[in-house]
Length: 308
Image (cartoon, rainbow, N blue to C red):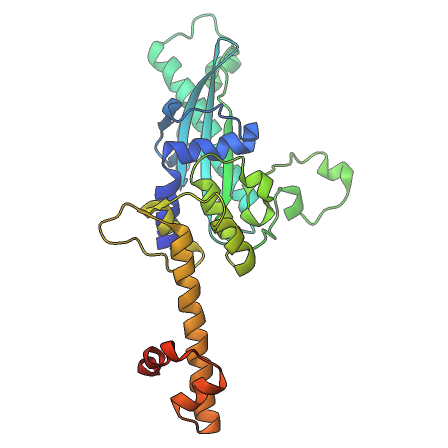
């Protein structure tokens, strides 16, 4: 697992961040899913082929984050299985990848139902179809919802559905092939008003990523209602948008506004040093002469001279 995968997985495993992503996507930012109602699940998906002889090889896949949710709706318990896939690059096979995960989880539920009935030996009075499948008429599946988080300022230009991956335009054929849509959060596609619907640091992380390549708009958001960030958020940003945010020694959080100003000054200084170096080389000038031409303030000249 690469460094980007590790830091985004660690970040999204936090229940409050995980819940915030789904509350935004499903409920428009309403705080319906409570972090304390989430339960971590094994991210290993194992499917044993159907059949009494167990023919074939088991398939094993690894999700990024998987949690179960138990929530009350109209005094009835609602159960969901929620998964998140983190992407730092566009995956052009994402619909198939997520479809495989979801189908494997449904198959696992069917297998677990069959195992439960086998242990209970409750076959009496069951039809042949129920006996052979191990899944009874009254058995129900728990819905699986997979959400893709795109940790990049780029546009997602990959397919978002299974049908988009097919070179078939005939509607009569496509109507016979069940489509599969991916559920995607891509920062570049989020309007500022949408970002406000997040209630955790995910708002700052996605906003920072969205404007990572736009200095003017980045200035605006970091000088706005931008909360301090912890190491988990800093790690994600440093890895995914290649910034150099530094957590002060002995501190638990960072003031992003100040850190951004420091980064801007460092970037401007690097540009100035490069321009000075080029002038000195091409025009055979001294450092002092080059700084005079570029109107560098006298108070800064000695510091810059030491770096040339």
